[in-house]
Length: 347
Image 1 (cartoon, rainbow, N blue to C red):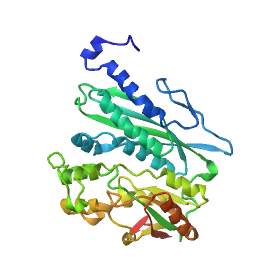
Image 2: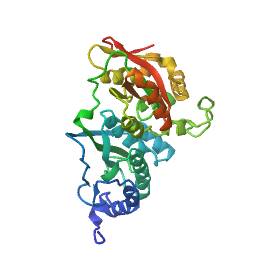
Image 3: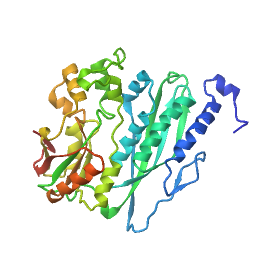
Image 4: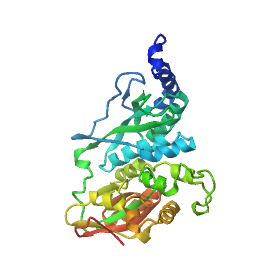
């Protein structure tokens, strides 16, 4: 690629040499995520991975794809780009683990108005960290310049991940039963959902994002909102390794409790959740107060402090809570599975 340069393409707004510089900067970060199974290195036309299938009767691949949404606008306003990649990975791998699958590898797609190798490297710093947190490999990606379509300073990030699970170990809610206990895993904040509403409530384009806010324990609004999405992969894997019989899992993303919890339920069963069983994070109180948002809308938009919910047998609840706390999670017994057709009841 030493001789690759097109003056005509550069005049049209795309500098291919900037792409080569970005690859040079991110290569060590990418390689830091490699796990057994990775084949080759950065620079090929396709990322290769050879999964370990020993002991599996019928391997099933589970895939997930997502982006970061308008949370990116906060990163641009704060000129902080080294954590947004964690959000991108989290939104994919947290979905995959809901099926009991271990993420194997991840690929990213970064679209930008103008390729700034330093900024691209900052973004990939977060992506690589997210992959390390979820024990999966970053095996490839794409950076595309879109001059004339996006402003020079703008960018968007999306990702794609693939995991694997033995068919008989799939978590799909089929064994869910009345009396199962619901364990909630604490979130780190807003995560990566509801930011169109957040941005409207705080008028972020004109707000002081760096000033300390008393209601946020002295943290700034920008710092609080940019806190990366919690990745729950290691915690769930620790439970499964210890033999905890997880019947269903829900990742609380866009749509909050009312949209996501029913997705883990089966016909005739409803999740009964005690809202006093877990702490509500200060950022949600501030959003509700500032935006004069009805209580139901809050729980139908945000995670409200719980990023993932697990359903498991009541006799394993204490073991699960102990293991989760040992894994560094804030975990709470937040309710149980009851008979009903509502899908979720918040009390």
